[in-house]
View 1 (cartoon, rainbow, N blue to C red):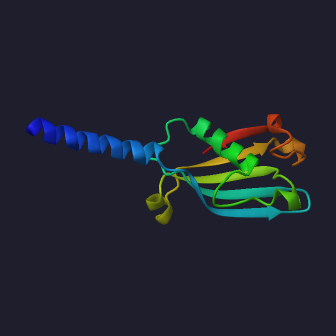
View 2: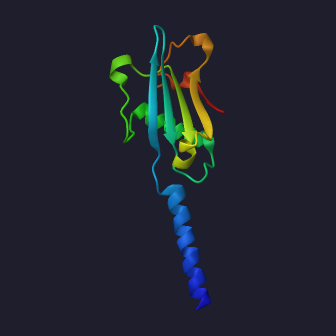
View 3: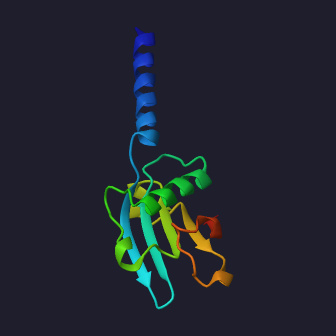
Length: 134
């Protein structure tokens, strides 16, 4: 009888952990576009809905690709008005509890070298951009 109870509890905990890590989608909480005469920046606040992010660089690449593809459920970027941004900054929160307490996990910056003076956008010239994780 003890084995059945322990197995049931362990199975439940395993399924709960699997759901909390891989069963929920990321969600955007806030976007703030900034435009100037020479550049267009997009600041994004994102809840990852994970227990832990194992590879931040791969995570950053997937988030940036979703921004370029404009494939978020919660928001659609207005790329038809100002074009694609010249820089993308994303504040990542692991879960909604951290978001409510303003404890971000890290910040992703997808930017081009300053020598280009915001000449390129994130969609047409991805080779000119680098990912920085702070």
